[in-house]
Image (cartoon, rainbow, N blue to C red; front, side, top):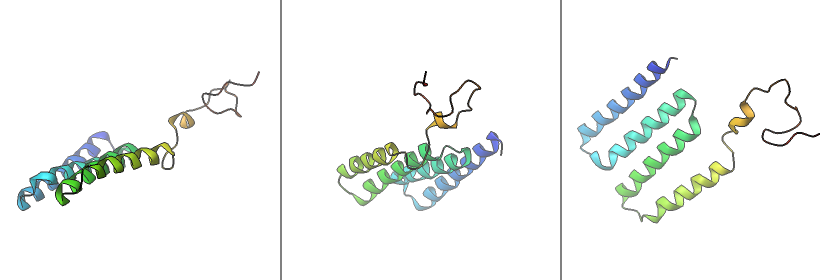
Length: 117
């Protein structure tokens, strides 16, 4: 799929979401939910899933805190949890592992480690 098609799909999701908000009248915090869903869709289409999914979920969580009138510290806890999960490298691999190896790379060393002499 071309980049223009991906942008058009993301834009369509955004506009449909904004139309739903206009129909319901839930502009705040509904706009955050629409932006979060649009970010998640964009990430799924472009392959940048972890970065955009966590950003989209953060926007949706922020909207939930405002809508449900929850204490603000819940946002801090959710953000900390997202940082911990992201740091555990559960959902993604380091970009260094995906790079193509050159002919002179030592195959039994990890990227960034010094090679054995």
